[in-house]
Image 1: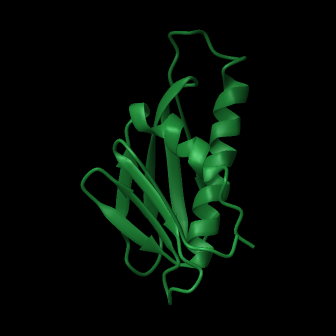
Image 2: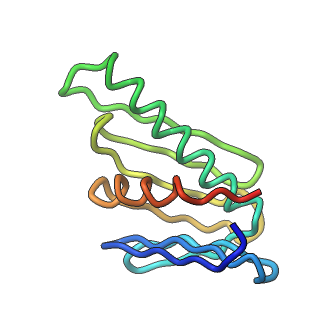
Image 3: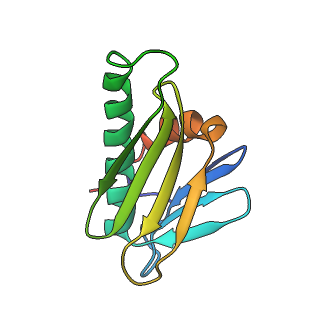
Amino acid sequence: MSDRLLKKGTGWRIGWNPNAVPYQGLIGGKDWAIELTKAEFKDFCRLFKQLAETMEIMSQELMDVEKIACEAESDFLWLEVEGYPHAYSLRLILNQGRCCEGNWSEEMVRELLQVVKIFEIS
């Protein structure tokens, strides 16, 4: 992906600008936004997809009324999904530098995940 890209939906936004320095990535919610470095953005996308896959697998193991929380972490950030395997919230904390925090409710996560899947940053 070499061009600037910004996607928005109800209560979320995500963007990539390969020419920006030092923050190429952007993630945000309804009332907040955080700029991310390339490494932070890559980890956000990778860990979010990983957690979504884990929730999909857990849907086979849990009863419909059971909730679960799963987390994943890199040197740059920490993510947590919490809720039912088919409907869960997402929380983010940056581990270094700006030490920011953000979250998306379960109503926003499914749509955000579909958009995150198109970002392939090398």
